Structure formats: structure tokens, C-alpha cells
Length: 197
Image (cartoon, rainbow, N blue to C red; front, side, top):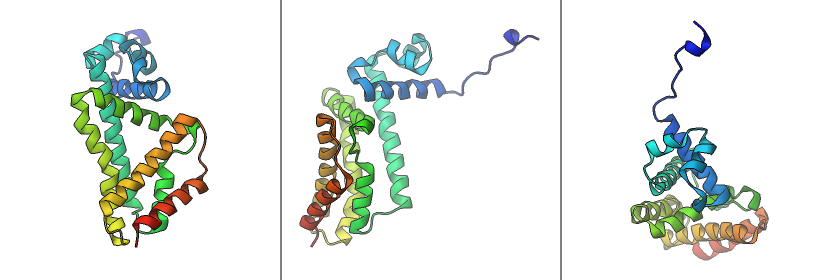
């Protein structure tokens, strides 16, 4: 039997769907959510446009599910990271937040996805609750260790630390200028001084 007549091995069930979603996230990170079309995503994913419309009837379904995949990945990675290396000391906070905060505009693809996701959720009722829960995930993980370190209002302290982190990322995205690690660590230290007694 020649190769052309041999049965083709199909991709595992769901593999095309995930590849399509990851292609959509790639487009969002580089060009923004407005550039997501079935045809553009199909091209990046290496599938036919019909395959994208088979899995996602509308562009909004595609974008919504891509953002949901991003949230699932984020939460899984966060839990794994904080389980393997818990945040217990002041230095741990600086190490952890310094490690997850993108301070270089050349590496800001994930932050671009996050800001596009927040904007999309503002216009999409179905995503609003999911994004609101995602935005509180990190705060909830940081509040217990902050309480053990002496924060009188640990959840509020966690919100301020996350806001500092996200604000720094926004500064990097909007100005296309790097924030040096030492500068960011100094910001974290100043905030930790204010919230820990």
C-alpha cells in the first residue's frame, strides 16, 4: 500500500480546538482582540477556516473561550507555583511578585492578553463574572501570608500589592519602557512597609 492510500492518523479529540484557542491568544497578544477572525486564527493554527467555525460559531465565542483557556492556565500555574514555593516572608513577596510582574516591554505578551481580556469583559456579560473572579485569584492567595506577617487588613494589603504589580505592567505597556527589578523591588518594599506592622 502506498503512503497516499494509508489511513491518516487524526489528531486527538480536542487538539484542534485547543490549537485554535492558543492561536487566538497569540493574535491577541501581538495585535489585539480586534484582529481575531476565524480566517486569521485558522492561518496561525494551521487549520482550515471551516475547522474554526466548526468549533466556534461566532468570533465572540472564539474570543471568550480563548480568554477562558488563558484564565484556566493562569490559575493552574499560580496554584502550582505557590504550592511549590509558598510566599511566607517579606523577601518571598518581593521574589514572587518580582517574578510574575513583567517589567520589560519586549516580554509583555501575557499582559497584553490580560488587558484585552479586561476590556472585552467590560462589553461581554458572559465573561464579566469570570474575569472578576480571575482578578481576585492572586489577592486571595496573598492575603493569608500577609496576615501572618502582621497586616491588619490582609485582603486590602493583597489588593494593593496586586494593584502595584498590575500598575507597573500597565506603565511598561503604555510607555514601552523597562522598569528595572531593583526599582520594582523598592516599590514593593515601600508598600510592604506601609501595610505590615
